[in-house]
Image (cartoon, rainbow, N blue to C red; front, side):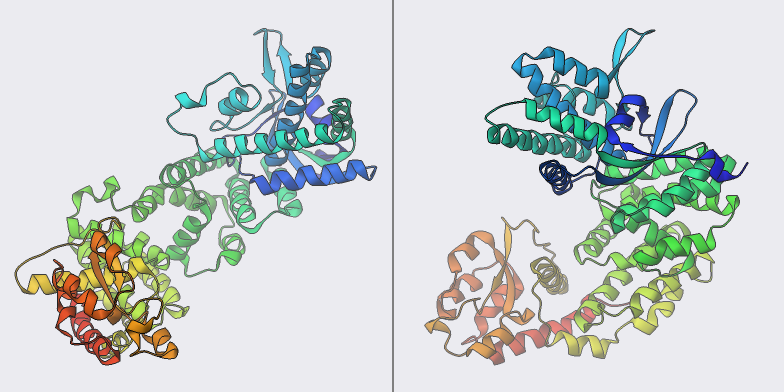
Length: 560
């Protein structure tokens, strides 16, 4: 019998499948993720189809794997199934509130709940994954738990609540437009049952599920990549699929605990690059397919995804317990790398930290911060060359061709701006990003203080320390030394910016330089106090101050 003979494909209204099937979303599947826009689009399309008396409205394919417990496993389609279930449940609730329990109970029995004879309990026809199901049952299908008792709501739980609210608002509008005649909602239920069509694909195993999923997948880029990768790894893992599934669950759990935003695809991209070289996100899936062709390779990569997930989350947060054995300077360097926005360095860090000893890692992280600053200031950050070099270096570390800071810097030498180039670029550097500007100025401030035997780390809290532009954003009669073109050129120059106590900064505003000078002189920051030595603030003053910054910079951000 061919593989296709084992696959059952049918085309019916999605409501009919909810009536006939017990469905479950396995724990390795992503949480509920639809935004309000997706829910609104679905409601709008169904409403239009109804009004135009269209015989059918097609919403794509749903792939399920048959299980022995008679509850089919949803491989693809959980977002649509969950949203349609919320819609039907909201219609049921309207009839309940009206006291029309007969209709409410029929809707519930047909589409939402089924009675288990052994337990004598009503259970949902659709089970979401472990993260979402209890919340879905208690807060969405029922309203019997007080949210205020919860310390926090998961992102997927909030999305479920948002979907419910959007649907309830839409149904309210429908009732308003029909003089509160709830019979119009019966039309919606019947249309969902018979006319909101899906291609329903039932497969006996994951191998079939993967083939169908890949063929029918038609969703957005980020969703497609993560789900395609997951299903491909499960498919190739064959008899080791349970281990692959557990690895995936572990990875996602670790990443989501650290960051509720979508970090799965970036993590896989950076980890893959650390082993196999730089890859663009849109090419990631094909690159993995080209390389991971056997059960052994699939399980190996699956293990790597699980094993490195904790390290990746440590790269996102300087206060992660991973850094507890490292010094304060290392945690500060990790925080700085994130503040500077250099995510492309992550393949290198994923390779380096497990391979280098602690001392070499600490020295290397300091050099990496200097390299990032040099790339930003020198204007080479937009080039793809450095990203490829990071991945090449990461692979060399994996292969133990690079084992310490000296060898690391030698590998990165090809993209490292020299002292001369860095100093020249720093002399005319402009910056709009206030957090990066504060970091640069604070580092120079600390360098000046260290040179004098003292250290003060300016507070990053904007309520304590703020960024001040001496030449203000808006020109007025107090600043006639600059015409409009010169103002555009010099306003964002680093030499025109300084750090200042936020309370003082709020008073300084667009005042003239003469009025600002006493406040500068009274500052606790050396680089701010020194502004008061200039008799006036003009182009020459900004150039002079920035030239001094440039001389300091090659010492602040040394490569060794």
